[in-house]
Image (cartoon, rainbow, N blue to C red; front, top):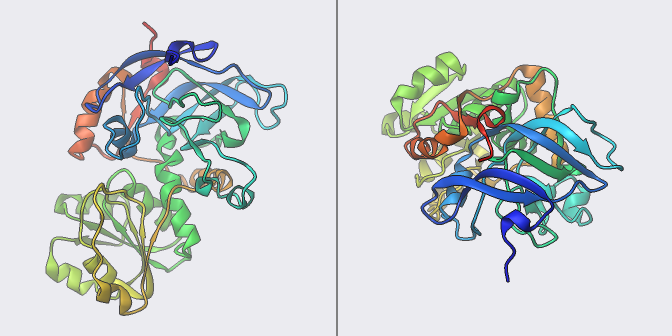
Length: 360
C-alpha cells in the first residue's frame, strides 16, 4: 500500500502540486524528512517558475509521477542544520537549484559534473535514494544535503537572483565550457525569454559581441536598449538571416519550441558551435550540409555541477546580473502558467513564497 505524501516523513510541509496531466496546481500537505547529520533545512522565500515546471506538471516529457510540486530556483534562509554540516549555519541565505542528490562517487561526480551522474536526483518529481518522492520549491520549506545547497552572495538579490539557479547556470555553463567566454567572441542567443535574456547578460559580462535572434520584432528594443545586445535579427526575415551567414563563433539556442536548425548553422563561422539548452518536445531536423560545411558542431548542455553553479552565482553578484522578473503570490501560479505558455512575461515569474504561502 502506497504511503500518503503527508505521512512519508516526520516533518509536515505545505505546497502547491499538480495531480494530473491538466497541470493545474492546488494546495498539498505533504512531508519532508527529519534533518540528517549533513542536511540543511531552510524556509523558502522565493522560487522562480521555469518552463520545465510546466512540462513536468503536464507530464509533457512522459515521466512525471503525481502529485508533483515543482520549483528548482529556490532561495531562502536556513532554519536548521545537521550536526555534521560544515558550510552553513542558521540564518544564512542559501539556494537550491535543479539537483538535490547524486551518487557522489562516479567519474562525473568526482569531476564536479553532478548533472551528468546517472544516479542524479532532481529537486522535484523523482524518487530520492530512500524511494520517496522529491518535492520542489513551490512549498514552505526545503531540506537538502549540504553538498547541493548554494551559498548566496550578500549583494545578490534573493528575488531576482532566484532564476539564476536554473536560467543562470543553464546559460553560464555552455558559455564557459565551449570557450564562448572570451572578450570579443561573437555569440548568438536564440530566443529572448527566461533563458535568453539571462544568456545575453552573461555573454555581455564575459565581453562577447552578442547577436539576438528572435521571431518577435518587438523585442528588438529590449535586446538592444535594455539588455545591451550589439545586434538584433528577426529570424523570420530571410535577408537578415542571410546577412548573418558565417559571422558567429557560437550560438546559445534557448528555444523550447520547434524551429529550423539550418539557418542557425549557416550563421556560424567554420568550427562554430550551436549549443542547445532549450528542450523542444519534438525532435529537431538537421540539414547535413549546413553541419558538414565548415566542420560545425551541434552540442547540448544541461545546467552545471554544484561547484560551477556557485561560481556562476559569484560571477553574477560581481557583475550585477539578475533576471528580469515579475513577482507573484502563490495563488496566481495557475494564471502564471497560462501566461507562460503564451510567452506573456518579461522574462521570469518568481513566486513570493515567504509572504504568500499559508498552510490551510
